[in-house]
Length: 155
Image: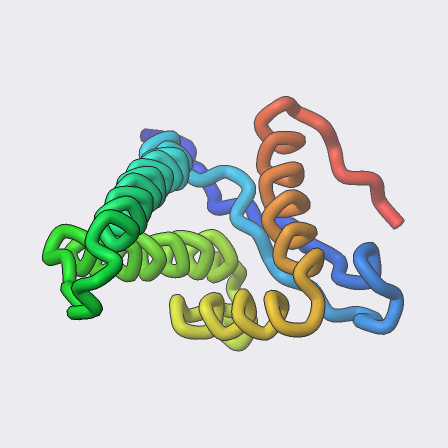
């Protein structure tokens, strides 16, 4: 091919979320291949299916416990344990997906690991839940804008 398709990255300016973040940015790969983009939706579907099944199992366990109120024995459900492992697997893959999306700039110091994404999510969940929402939404918005041909305004 005569033309190399470049990995294009655009900044998510964290000051757009809260001015206290100043010049901090997260660099987003806005032109990943279709298979990479689709993987996010596949993981979300997998996660939703596991979550739904866990809810069904919890409801069945609650009904069983209610019916067996006199038997105070704790029972573990192997399927529920397996689903818990599946949640961990999918969560790890989601963290890795975001890490890859945010690790395409030339400056390797701006790159993310899956563990760092997980730490960010946990910290945000504890202190500032809307930060994680902002990062996800803004990352997708930059990618969608790029795909639609919307040019980023020059400052």
